[in-house]
Length: 140
Image (cartoon, rainbow, N blue to C red; front, side):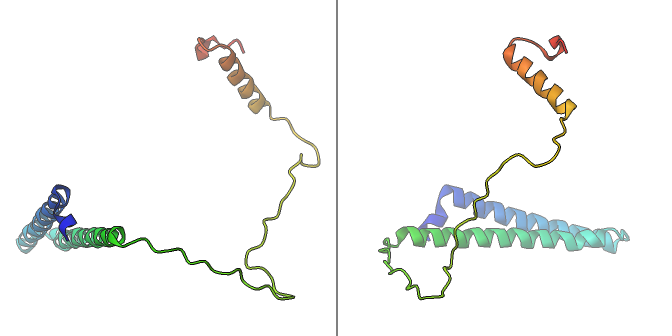
């Protein structure tokens, strides 16, 4: 619990309270506008309390995660359990199979040369060969 009272957490707590009070205040303001005749404000009167609820949810989740991390950090490291390998019986299949290896080769059939790609690759190789050149200096 002490870790939730660091300066960073105090700032988070204060920000949460300010945001919730501000959002609920804006919701109340929209209710007063809606009762005065502004029908669009009814939607906002519902929206602002939803925002306040979201802020409370995020704050609660972050507090819960911080407490869980603190408990995990304070807990002594557990000794790894050594388990014997599972017994393999005849006819049983392993749980994890080896990946299938496929040799990659050129595709069969006619290979069509992409002229635009070849021109672009030539342009890039020219730029690489001439590091001080500008793209407008390209002779092609």
